[in-house]
Image (cartoon, rainbow, N blue to C red; front, side, top):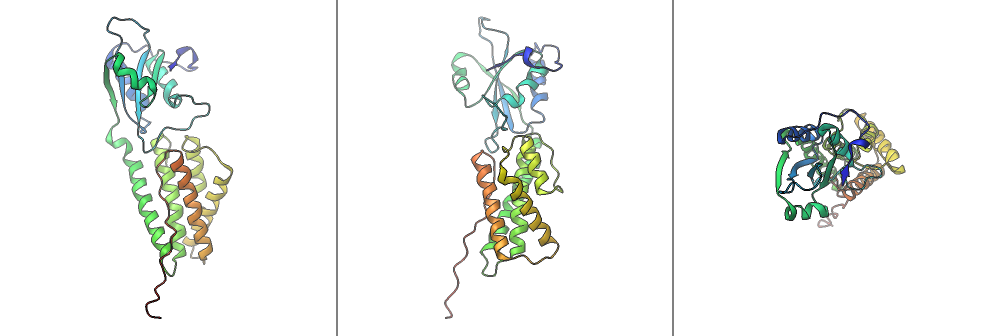
Length: 261
């Protein structure tokens, strides 16, 4: 799909004509978007036919997918007009799984033009590593014969928060690990990790309240811990359905030992 300079509505750079200028503009555009793993340039027709628009195939990190943008048609809308402004000209771009990308090698030569630096995704990966560990701790605490309700609640809430922070960073958002879960959720929704749903804010507030109570040493019941695990899993279901990484709290209790009866 072509995104036109006339629709950009912002200040644009002088037109990028040389390969290095195009490469620099693409790198600048994707520098704050770690969800883009790499991009390839579709070389012009050998005979010089066709228009002068830049043709680009962007390859997102499939662990995160692409941000949800209202009225998006191609998945490129989140970055397309930043790319137009950086290149200073019309941009013909698509994602790697579309029909045009599949047919592109038949029509012309593809040249790698951008590769995500390893450092760009390190913080998001750390959040996911921590989220996986928290989910395992919450699952273990939930399966104990004498449930550790405090552990279940704390680590279930942390699992949700860190999964949201990981996707937020991947989409170029700002992370604040000290923020409350409702604020983390708001930031994630704002950068396209999730569409807003009525149940989310209330669920985040309940998880935050239970976590604060647990950290304050208040008595937490098993019923509250079970509900916290269910809410965390509801977030995980939603994140996974939208193509984001997430981890479930395993709720199956261990069988009771009756060998001594």
